[in-house]
Length: 431
Image (spheres, rainbow, N blue to C red):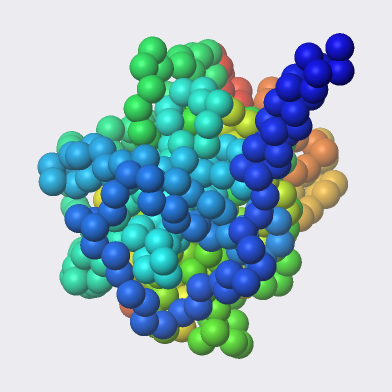
């Protein structure tokens, strides 16, 4: 009796040991990567079955090692002559899966950098299967022209990304239909860029809910975030920026900062002491940009087979992003970006036009031809929804002034009431 049961028990114990081994962390002797020169392993030398180590933050600010088994090379998956390395993640990633915010997590074999975790399966996967952008493709970004082109005078009829337009008038119409559409799960699995969590801090639930369906259509995962405090009130790099953003650290691009903020989080892949490479895929594929770059802090990593994400805060500005390309983003430590300062005063009036309540808001907005108007729309709509007097069925009056350096100011004045369009009046006013 005991002899017949013993193999079953031994088998169960062996299975438990196998699971424990798969989830066991790397030895403590592994030292986290640092900024500076690093040896590269060419794509041609990478073979199936090789054991690699990725570094990413699951909670806090310290990266942890994650075992990765190389499955092979998926040829031309990322474009003509652009292979992707397929890997199977172990450790904590078995529970969390490949999470939003892991984009850019550096992967090493025998201490040599091979690339950045940048892609995941587009449909449910029981395994943490990831796509790794080879580091050779990311290093190409360093050789691109860093000058920012003049904004085009005519609309771009062939946008770089096949997503919804981001200009306010297009967004207004799409907001009507976006909320009624359902995201369809793809019929077949393929590797897609890991969604970059776009963290909205200081936004009301109603304002964020209005824009979330449209942001999803654009491939953006909108998440509510805590405040970054005074750290994001200025675009000047914080003291100590010289020693920030080591490989594996959280990094964020800042679209809005101040009383409210919008930031996109990823992970640092490479840092030569001044230039930083991250993400391993585009942020928005805008080409040359001038966007504040900040450090980040991960509150927790939400596990899911469908849409796992890192809940995180941007903490302090340490430089500026200057490239947003197919194979990743590139920033310069210590660089200062230019943003548009915005001040908004919202008043609720009584029947006699006296002021019942007043609030002031101050924030800065990323400068980019397509994104600036939409960011202005989202932030202005959010300021209106912050008052207790806010409601969809109401009349709003707008008086504003745009000040231009070296030019005449532009005054604005209008009134908006709720109409037949199924969009709140504040949203229409914000356009």
